[in-house]
Length: 324
Image (tube, rainbow, N blue to C red):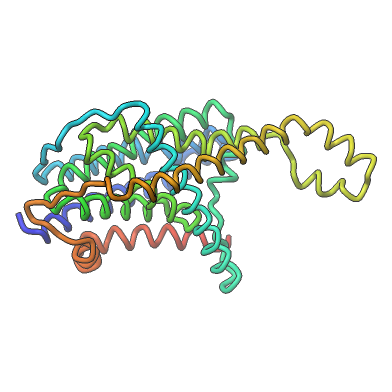
C-alpha cells in the first residue's frame, strides 16, 4: 500500500469520526429539545448529547474504517510504577506549558479579532456533578481517546517510523479538541502518550497517564473551584465587614486551592528537569516506509483525506470562536 493511501484512509476515517459525531450531536439536541423542552439546561443531558454520539457511534465507525489498513505489532515491554510517576511529571510539565501557550495565543486572537476563544468546556465542567465529571473526563474519555489516537493510529502508522507516527497521532489529537485553549497541551501530552505506547506496546500505560493528567489537571481543579465564587469575593472587597466574613467562610477551600496550585507547579518543574536530563534516553526507531516529521506534515496537508479531517477540525475552531 502506498504512503498516499495510508494518509487518505486515515484522514477519511477521522473525518468520519468528526462529521458523524457533530451531525448526531446536532440532531440529538434537536430531538431532545423537542421531546423535553429546556432539558439542555441539565448538565447530564448536555454531556449525554455531546459524548454518546462521539463515543458510541462515531468512534466505532472510525475504527471499522481504519481497520482496512494493515496493522503492525509493536515491541512489548513493561514500565515500572516508578517510571510511570516520572512520566506523569513530564506530562504535567507539557500540560502546563501547553496551557500557557494556549492562553497566550487565545488572548492575542481575542484582542486582535474580537472573537471568543475560550473553551466552553471549562464552564461545562464547573457546572457538572463531580461524579459525572469523574466518569466522563477521567475514566471514559481517556480510554476512548487512547484507543483511537494511540492504538488505532499508531498500530498502523508505525510503518512510517516512530517519529512520524508519534507526530501524526499527537497532531490529530491536538486539533481534534477544536479550540486554542486545549490545542497546544493536547499536542504536547499526545507526543508523550504516543512515545509511551510505542515503547511499551501496551495501551494501559498511556491510559493511566491520560487519566492521571485529566484528574490532576482538570477534574481536581474543578472540584476545588466548585462552590468558590471568586467574583463574589472581589465584589465584596469594597465592603470590609462582609468581605472578611466571606473570606473566612471560603478560607478552607482557598487553602486547598493554593496547596493544589503549589503541587501542580512542583509537578511541572520536576517534569521539566526530567525532560531535560532524560532527553537523550528517548529512543526513536525507523519504519519500513520511513518518513521524517517534515515529510509526514507535507503528506498531511497535501492528501485529500487528511485535508478533509483538518478542515473539519478547523470548522470546530470557527464554531467555538464565533460569537453567538
